[in-house]
Image (cartoon, rainbow, N blue to C red):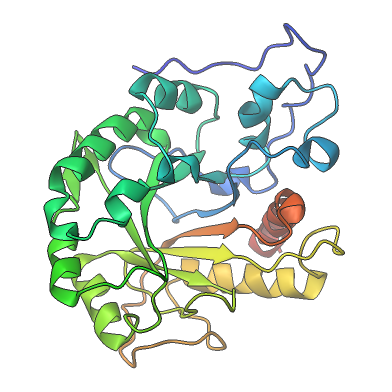
Length: 306
């Protein structure tokens, strides 16, 4: 059992820094190991990681001690994508501690380890996949989708790739698993890839970046978007009009639709059913990404109550 930590003022003067939840927290019911809570699927908005020195100048309060940065960040955004697991996994006790520092309704996504993703024989990585999932399961109900990132320099073979997808469980370790396929090889990404992802019920990544394949085909019961064009000259990372647009797109995805002005690879439309949505502000002007996430959460609140 994970013991939840309550914000404490011991060791610093930040006693009231955690009082205000994210603007859209009411739209984020507590999940379970079987997936989202009942009711309307939530739209989660977040950032990549929580340890970043420039955020100590424009996101984290000056008086906040570094060991409490996750505690603070998880109360101002509603999801965080863990990038560190790509470079090295943690002990289950560490994952459990991270979970205990976050509030109900908060969710982590996590990248799968590089040692798996860069294997020349993906179909033979079953033991490594099992080892990774068995450890990160310690996040409990704070664990969201697992991101399987295939970098642009990795040439994928269709048969090996499909055999690898068969290794990824939908249920294991007493919980449901959700998977995201982040394939960055333009030559591999086509309508056949979309059909394969749909057969396995796995999400693909939508990104607004011009450095990676950009497509918005919905392939699972949730949507995973990575917004990667924040600008240093914008206080909220994106101009107001663009944030308004992404708020509308997130609501369209959540309602079961596909935004008409985003590119798709397949002519086959998915079923129009409500979906959970994850929107992350990643990379680019990273120092602006927390402000971008909070600004989008504010807009989603306005759309919900307006």
